[in-house]
Image 1: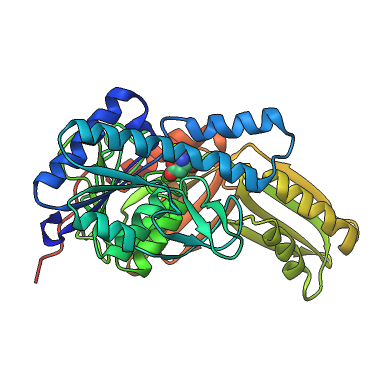
Image 2: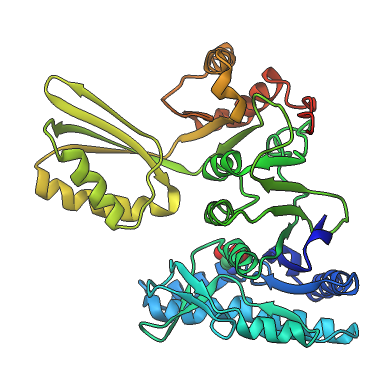
Amino acid sequence: MTAAFDTVVMKFGGSSVADPEKIRLVARRFVEARRRGLNVVGTVSAMGKTTDSLLALASDVSPSPNPRELDMLLSTGERIACALVAMAIGDLGEEAVSYTGSQAGILTDSTHTRAKIREIRGDRIRASLAQGKIVLVAGFQGFSRDTMEITTLGRGAGDLTAVALAATLGAACEIHSDVAGVFTADPRLVPGARKIPSISYDEMLEMASSGAKVLALRSVELARNHAVRIHARSTFTDEEGTWVQETGMEKAIISAVTHSETDVVFTLTGIPDRPGVAARIFEGVASAQVNVDTIIQNVVHGRAEMSFSVPAEDAGSTRDAITNLQEELGAFDVEVNRELGKVSLIGAGMRSHPGVAATMFRTLADLGINLEMISTSPIKISCMIDRDRIPEAVRALHAAFQLERPPEVEPTM
Ligand code: ASP
Ligand code: MG
């Protein structure tokens, strides 16, 4: 299907380049695409768990590593992988060149460790493509013109580099990893989970934000904003994966069940009930760069009670932000719960089908599972439940909505 484009951006995740043998295999993938007549731009993640090891190394050396130096350190991971892939491509008889993010013209703002891409100057990439070379761009990093510093884009942002390159070059975007595409549920939990042939950006966004790890959330957002079609597929086979695009092909009411087991829930009680308090609390949390998920507020006897969830890695900075707010807003109590997880149903079809929430709650009730928090969007229903019960909840919901069976395909016009 990439034939409609003459340029393809192919991204390979860290597990696809984890050792020399895999690097040679990935090199072959690039060479095959080139020999099909495509202009090939590649981006690969740091080998295996390199980024984790570098982070661990940094914190062994320093209790709170300097963010600029952290970016200098972390950006080396993808640089190593790209250079090695370029060497392996050379051995297969094609020309390749690797570039750091900054050499490739990936310009970002100046925020270290979570920079945002502002623009990509694709000139150098285009010039190398014109010479017939396969171009490898180190993912997950860029350069700030304002500070003249190297930046990184945040964990998992190799996907983001790939989508941004595809948008700039008007290319197709293939994201290769050790999973074969997007599934109706995590196949490790649900043996009957089915690969979804195509799914809409909106559903994929909800899936990524509720625990599906195939594609990073920000990359799907960027793809939607620039109408980049993403083909998420396996590194190791030629079979079709999942296309993420404007609309899915299936007429499913529910597309997938997702789950996450890493949310941490904060409950604040005894908060003053007056205008502006919620704004202050979430301004405080936002300035710690934390993305809050489900938020629930109740007012009991003139005092508000508020619960919200954050990703586990942000629990520490959320705690600090709240401690500052306790000084400002007066005494309120804070409780932190690390025993919950979230199970979600995603499906564009639930907009026009009543009863989805009822079926979901009934399914969980029949298992005796208590719902601690519920939140919804037009195409998602999420329940926070006991973390230990996530696997059986996912399996029961997958069965209740018959997701192992392919739904009818929308007739093509
Ligand atoms: N190497 C980075 C990380 O592990 C970026 C990526 O893999 O996408 O977060
Ligand atoms: Mg990685």
